[in-house]
Picture 1 (cartoon, rainbow, N blue to C red):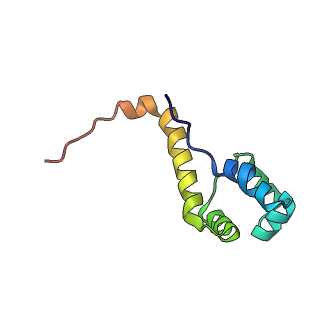
Picture 2 (picture 1 turned 90 degrees about the vertical axis):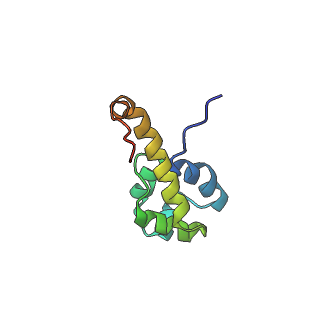
Picture 3 (picture 1 turned 135 degrees about the vertical axis):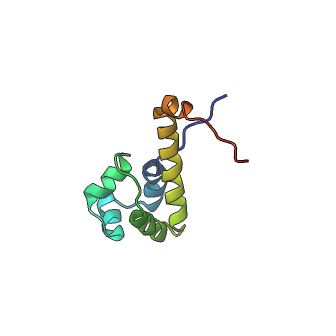
Amino acid sequence: MTALPPMHPGELLREDILPALGKPVSDVAALLGVSRQALHGLLAEKAAVTPAMALRLGKLCGNGPDLWLTLQARHDLARLRREMAAEIERIPTLDAA
């Protein structure tokens, strides 16, 4: 069985958070203090969660910025692990004596 790749934070926001809030994207963008386009980029998974956006989302959702940054980091690492697999395989692992 293979594990699912880590989700982009925009997926969590789009699929779970926004429906639970019951507010249109334009209202949520205004509450966050960002443009509607910036929020749409995140929801479409075309933009990454920055530390500033993580602070905003963490405050809005009441769960702090760490969750949002961790989701983004896991997503980015999984994507890069796939993209860079051959390159990383060529790097030796050194043992410290």
